[in-house]
Length: 284
Image (cartoon, rainbow, N blue to C red; front, side, top):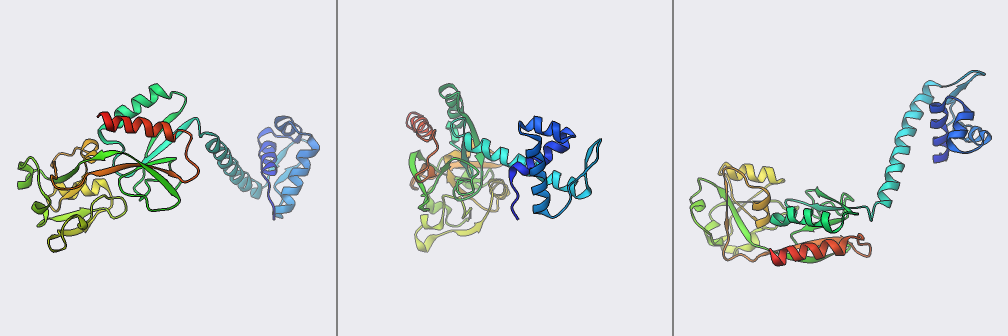
C-alpha cells in the first residue's frame, strides 16, 4: 500500500475548499488531477473517504479520521522541511547541566550583536551528548571527553572544580577544600552527564557514592545535608541555591569545556560559536 503526500494534500484541500474545483484551484492543478489523486488514495486504503453529490462533498466517518491524520502528517512534513532549511537561520546549542556558566549571558548578547541573521537557542538535555545524539540540538557544550566516534569536539576553555555542600556543613566555613577533606562524605554523581567519579581519589580513600539523575535532585539532596557534590564552576554560576555553598577544590584538576558536533557535518555556525565561546573563556 503506497500513500503519497500529494494524495493527502488533495484530500485535505477537497475537505477544506468544499469542492473538487476549488481544491484544484487552491493546489494549482487540474480538477482531473485532484479526482485521480483521491481515487488512488481510496484504492490504496481500501475505504471510501468522501460522499459526493451534485451539491456538496462531505467526508465519511472513516474519511474524517483519515483527514485528521493527514493534517498531522502534512504538518510534520512541513516542520521537517523548515528544520532542514533552517541551518543558516538558527543554531541550537545543547547542554546538560549548565551552558557556558558565567559566560552564558555575555555569549547570548554578543551572538545577537554579531550574528543577528542566525537565531540562537540554548537547549537543556540531560544526556551524555547534551542532546546531540538525540537530534535535539546542532552543537553541544559538554564537560567530559566525547568518546563516540560519530562526533568531533574542541576545547573552549577550562573551569575550576567546586565542591557543593550544605550551608550548615563545617566545610562551608572554609574558603576552599581538598579532596582528602571530602573522603568521609557521600558523593552524589550523575553517571550520564557528570564530570566527577570516585577516580579523583586514591583507591584506599574514596568516598561513598550515591547516584543522582538531575541538577535539581542533586541540589535538593545536598541542601538537605545528605551528600556533597563536585562540579564545574559553571554549575555554581548557573544554579545558586539557598542552603547550598560552593567552595573551590584546591587539588583537583580543572574541567575542560568542549563544543561537540557531528563528524563530517558541522553546523554552518559551528566555527563562529567556537570562536566566540573561546574568546569569552580566554578573556573572562
